[in-house]
Figure (cartoon, rainbow, N blue to C red):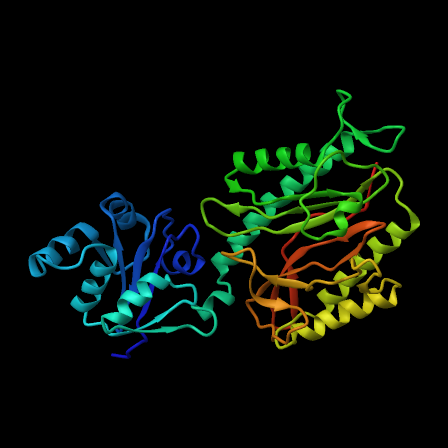
Length: 381
C-alpha cells in the first residue's frame, strides 16, 4: 500500500477553508481532522455533531470525543485534562508520530504535541495544493454564487436607477430621502440573505470615496459621479464565494470618468486575451498596467502622499476563500488549467473617485472562460 504523509487539522470548518475542503462538513466549533499514513480520513467530533457528520461529512472513520475520553480515563486516571491531552492520546492510539499541519495551526496545541514527542511540520505552501485546481462541481458552485451575485447587482443598480437627481447633485429616493450607501447595501444584503448567501463587507462607494479601493462607502450617494458596487457573498450551503464589481453613474459622467471607465474595460479585455494555461500572471498584470498607462492614466503617489492610478493586483483566486491562490499581480505565478481567478483592473484618483470592473474566469488550455454574465455599462438613465 502506498503510504501518504499524515496530516492534521484542528479548526472550525466555517472559518477553515482547508478543513471544509477536506470534509465537506460545516461546523461552527473546532473539530479534529486526521489523514493517516494509509490515506484514511478520521474526524473527531462532539456528540452534538457526530450524527450529522455521519450523514454529510466526507470521512472514512468518525470518532466521538466522549468515547476517547472514556478510554483515556481508564488508562490515565490521574492524567492531564483537556482537549490537547485527548488529541495526543488519540494520535498515540493510531501510532502517529509525524504530521504535516497548516501554517495557521493553533500554537498552544502545537506546543503541547511537540512537548509530548509529536513532530509537526508546517506546510510551506497551500495545505491542499489541489484546491487551486477546481473540479467541475466546484466550478458549478462558483457559477451559482456568481449568478446570485449578479442578481444582487441588479437589485443595487435598480435602486440607483429609480433615484432622482437633486438640484444640488445628490441622489434621492421616491419618498424624498437621500439615497445612501447604507441603504443600497442593505437592499443587497437583504436579497442575498433571503436567497441563501452570506454577504461580507459589500462596497457601495460613491464619488471620491471610491478612490480608496476597500472603502465600503457611507452617506448620501452623488449624481454624475462614479459609484463602485463590489459584491462578494459566500453561499451558505456550499461555502463557495462569488465576487463581482461594476462601476456606474446616475446622471452625466465627466469626460475624464468616461475615459477612465473605457480604459478599465479595455484593460479587462487585454487580460482576457492573455490568460491561458502556462502564462505568467505577472506578465498579464504588466500588460494591464501598460494598457492603462498608455490610455493616459498613470500610477504613482501624489505630493500629499495619496496613491492614484492602478495600484493593486489584477486578480486573485476564488473558491472556498474570497482570496486564495493563484494571484495575478507583480509577483510571478504561472496560471494553470483549472485555476479560477478574478480579473479586476481599476483606476483611483482622489479628485475623481474610482472605477473598477471585475469578472471571474476559468483558466483553460487555450484561453479563459468568463463565468460572469452581467452586462457592463457606466451610465444609468
